[in-house]
Amino acid sequence: MAATKKSTQKKTTRSQKNNGNMSEAESALMELFVDEIKDIYWAEKHLVKTLPKLAKGAASEALKDAINEHLEITKTHVSRLEEVFELLDKRPQAKKCEAMEGLAQEGASVLEDTEAGTATRDVGIILAAQKTEHYEIATYGGLSVLAKTLRLIDVANLLDQTLAEEKEADETLTSIAENSVNIEALEE
Image (cartoon, rainbow, N blue to C red; front, top):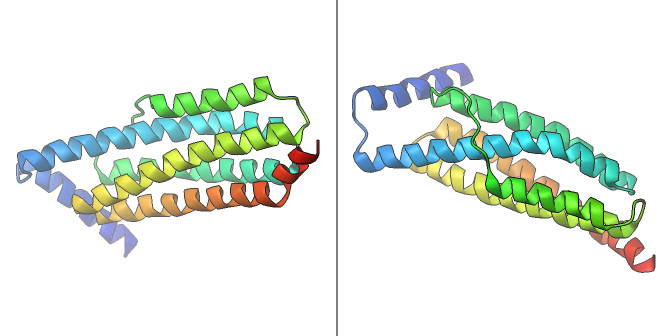
């Protein structure tokens, strides 16, 4: 049944484009939507490269585990976005995400500016990671709403899955900060 929905979604998108049934506003909105999908696709692929550095820099085993677990989930996000491109009848294409590049640089700065093996560094890593999660939450939330507006329900469902996982990662980071890392940093 999922394959049928996927196939139907592709046909609808193709049909709207090929038959010229999209209004100028819908066409402009679709173009913006695809552009933003390319942006978050780049961001997720970039995170696959940068998350291991944060995990390596963390002292807390709980934080290392959370980052490594989210790395695997991020790889799923990349695949899920490739499925979104397929549903949109587009080839996967990344467009440099300036925001994510800046957030990644901020994470790298934490590693440079704090002492290895300290809870203070872990606090900085959590802050940098949560900034990234909040950016992703905002992006996936907005894209999901826009997909629903464009009547791309299968796409919206995929984006909603990722949104839920990003929220869960943020909650995990908050829990690690509240239950151990922040307290340990205060005692250093």
